[in-house]
Length: 292
Image (cartoon, rainbow, N blue to C red; front, side):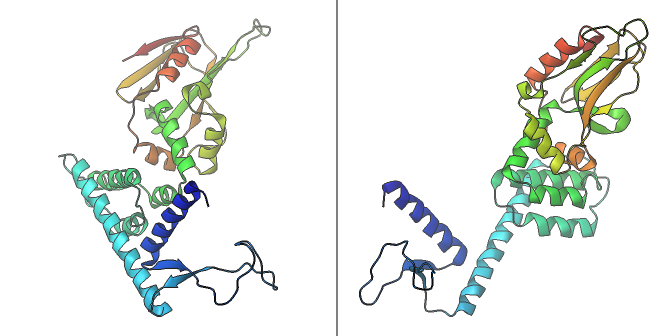
């Protein structure tokens, strides 16, 4: 056994002891034992060489494991609530969270042991206390089931999201096109697209967010923009105003679902610099771009 394998086995043994509350040791074989650790019995079953080191019955061991789980869950929810108090702003609340919502929150949050995730759950509790109805049960369930890969995709998506007030939703601008008229059917370059992967959000990330219901599956198009009507998007601390220089310009974008909107609120980051540069470069020819 190599040193690395020994370290992994020691780590695994410690993890098992923490979760079971008992130690597992290698079984002492009576008589002669032939064959390697991967050998099989006559019935085709691999022998199990490790057993629990305890004189307690399986029932007592099960009760002890349940107690350890309850203790860990209590510690988890206490950590989340402590974080919530630390994060809570000194503002006036719009009411108390719904009692049923709060029970669902505790049931879902008590298994969150990761410190970074505990802070996200603390933000949810603060947000719901400040403004009840901000986070749905569906959003809590989605966050609870989210894998690390899915959470990473959401974190990469957040700096690209602009808030569109008229739709009360977050969107990600991905380009625009000009509807061809009779006089410019042969016009070239009437479509501009933004490469989101250059800003850190790859297409697999986009598909992941669609699969877990945070992004709508199809691109959405705006109505025809008129030169006198600016299209405004709010990013963290900045507002982008796009004013078309001509008629028949249409924006294309990804739109976050309601669940996506709610979870995006947990991640407050400034606009991605690469994405900001791409926006300005892509839209500059056909739009007046102003940041406020």
